[in-house]
Length: 543
Image (cartoon, helix red, strand yellow):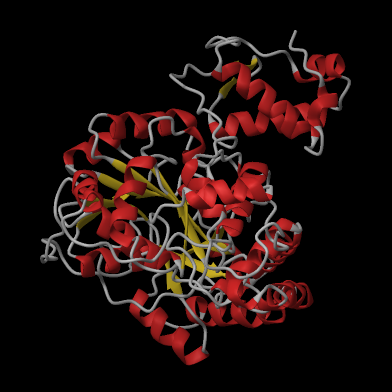
């Protein structure tokens, strides 16, 4: 019988702590493959918890693929070649220490023994003196002369010189006006953000107004590392985090690091603007469709790609999670060649409704094959052009060689304020409110659609995360006509095929269904009925 001390759960919900305990035992081989887990009621009685607690833990394990179920027999441990990623939270290398001193170096006129409000990483004055003397140039926006040991090291790290972008060999990106993935602005905690901005303004001017290192404010990177561990099970050093002005800019920087010889594959459907960026950078790319929550690894091999962009913790548009078996296949693909990289976009992962957010692919990476990317534009507001990526050590060296001469692309004022927002727990509480609100809105939309005149010709696909609905409408209506009528009603009509980067247009599928993506975050709740009425007119009363 499985026995765990649930008193160690701390602030975690009991079901989540139980999930982590069983998951850890499976990963370490304590529970061998095909072992039958105890029945829900027996395990609940043994642990002194409710059956519902055990059920929710098992559902998480089932969704991630750590267990499988057999009808009338129960749950069994899946057969996995799985390795635990080492915990990097405690790692604080020399560069971390130097980064922490970026706003307190020898140029400051104030007393360096006094910490700023944001410096949780305060050192004693003697330590500051010693470490400041050991400062190197790596994280400061200072130009590097040619033919120095630094440039020689960069040449080694980059392997190949930068190349002139060349034309991509496939069809250009379709020019579509996609419905923007917006957020509900009335939920933004304006007064709390004002408080964080006022605290940032109280910092010494020589600290607030100086240019930040190219990777961003260390206090913000440290706050992010702590938050990611607590909320996403990511063990990462602040040294590997890079702050940037939006995911598009950082994706472009990443392509610069990877080089023009990169052959890139995008998971589709997905965010097609990134394909346009790759095209502009001269990087060859193709699309690969995710089917049954997985990529066809054999097809990926045939594409001869060395980089693939995926969203394994939130497969669009279903919000499903890539099972652990499929993740292992993806890792095996990446591990075959040292040049292969997985680019993980963890967008909207915080907005999961049926359960806690699942661990990203980056949390399982033990060989440094995954680049993790996320942004605050959706959880805070579109005007917050603040994103971040986490680079493996090898790619980080190449990034430093290319961008060490530049300053951070995000203002110091915004970074200080955001650091406070995260450190004081405001961001976590805001995400919780968003999750609760959007789940309610999702249910309102689902109810309204099922009680509309469309109900007999429509089905709403289950979406477990994000702020959108996938509605399949059986119709003879031509797609272009439907879009034309939608414009006359002032309704944004976006089809699932519009998210296919390498396809030219939307059309009905083989069964005569139009696949419509509704981003309900951009539509006020009082406008739900008007939107559905417009859909009724378009698909039921026009030809």
